[in-house]
Image (cartoon, rainbow, N blue to C red; front, side):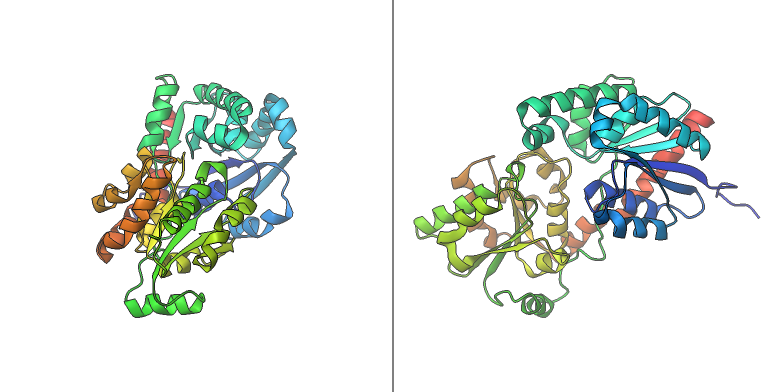
Length: 393
């Protein structure tokens, strides 16, 4: 019988810092879950030791057929002695006969860049390094990390970016010998989809103890400087001060972070029109119950929260980052809800305009299809197969 499947699965190593419930690990999980059966034997190599918060995710990965290996370094050791970590990683890869190596995040990218050319190395860049590191670590440390990463990526031959905007940034920053691909991260498009009927949306609101009437806007993300949740609250305060804030408009804030205390202080004059939900595993339900999603972010590689919101039927009130233009290209009516970075008055105007902007359920479903995680996994499968043919014949 003729078959297109390989005679034996190809070993592939996903190299990560630690297994824990965070964005890059969700991407690894979804890649593994969506790869065609019979092609790969997946290994998860965590450079540091498994911690309690990662146990449930490790169990999930093992249930998907992953073998988990931990090398036991500390983050400080990885930063100071990446070549030593690379030597131990090299021994591990040789022991398990792994040639295809896919790294995720800063320290794994640096460590794998010191491996020899016997391996097919691939790295995924989930953000725009210069902006993300500067906002997250400060100008001095962020600039150092960016330079360190760029030197490491220059030693790689294959880089995957999560968006075209992200790709353009790395193409300008890396030598031309480095091949740069695009494979957008994916969402669960069976989970993030618009309610089938108004009654279903009303039922979600009832289950979540939300107002059954009125306009609900949701902020979904960390309460951190890069996301600028304070601007959104200042925009609402501006509307209230000018007596323009509709009494039936409500803001839900999903997430936590270092700015939480400051945000709660800003929200006090807004009373019950702002609710801090915190971390929740019911993000899809909150988005399905909402009318709009809002983001004031200053830097994004690929904002899955916006994709999940639109796929759930929310209009997107958003800052004018180029990435938002890329992902909202299929719903051009949302350009009316775009405001300049850091501009409180424009953000306030967009909040007022949001109820007049609409799109149909089919457009929401199309957004989910374009950015589905199964589609992402198949894109990686094609890249893996292309690289195996390129380097192994």
